[in-house]
Length: 253
Image (cartoon, rainbow, N blue to C red; front, side, top):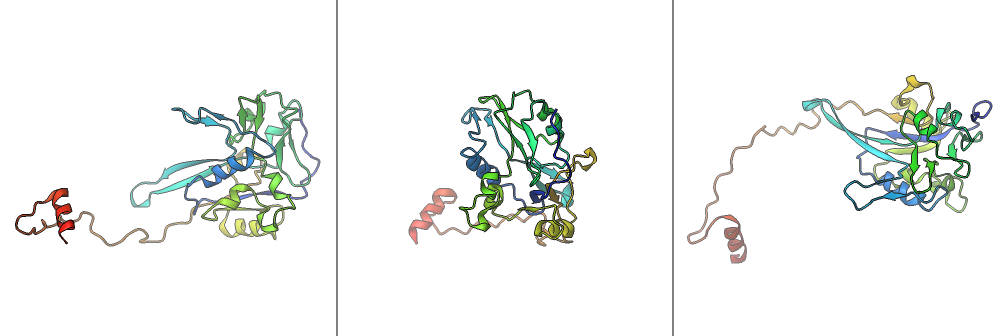
């Protein structure tokens, strides 16, 4: 089986995802697919993309849940991808060393040349972050866009994962979560960010920011629960109602 690097990673690069402002637009998933299908993990296979049950390899998936009932209910959009854990079982269970964790930044990757497609890593991952490519016969996963974040041909502000670069709501953040003074670490501390399924003991690097409590009265407009029926329109002599009447009145102006 594969061993983890000795000692903690020098950096812990990862994502912070704000569940309060994610709108579930799937832009992160689409841009992730677009970038990585031509990147180091290319191609990302599509299975029956125009069929009744399309599927394929997606490093980032967005799930939507309805939480609570009545006025207390809300919609929560939950993006899911590899969490680049500090103690990843997907690495230690790998029999060939194909799944490994980098010592310099904590990113978990797959060496496709060593992968035999046994799927042990996908069974060991409790987050469902591994994606088996049926065409290539190997396991694939989020690379944290390693070919973007270290690409010196990009401007510094563009050296972020594709999902972060494209998020229209700024619900995704990238940085060094091993540095308590980094912007992402301060954001996690301020918003009480949490580990997903912390009880499993895998110490995920990525953090989630919880939805903020709703302000009292938020969403209340003061409008009555049911509007009174509108009074029938007063039509000029010779004019009819309905769609044809509306069209007649429009053209008569």
